[in-house]
Length: 99
Image 1 (cartoon, one colour):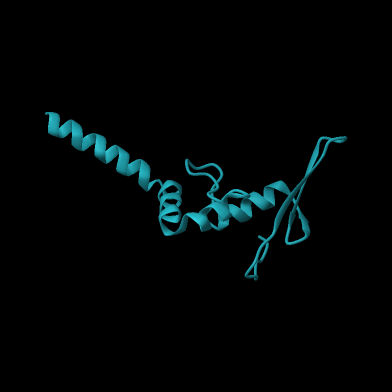
Image 2: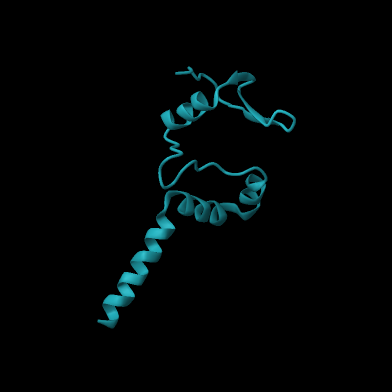
């Protein structure tokens, strides 16, 4: 396990077209693919689960800031699966009303 004691973390992936090889760096230090994914999973970001890594993609942060609280809340509901639950609950309630 890699000890993490920082307020800011940097993860970088490089790809070499000539060798078809990917390299991963964590806070500027080379890290294996397995160790990086283990590190994410130890922080609660499971790649194998239904939710997988729930990280805001590059370029999306600015959109969230511009959208304000409503946009952030929508993203949070999507990430946590709450919006899916709300949709299913809505469908169940409409079926119950029809019955």
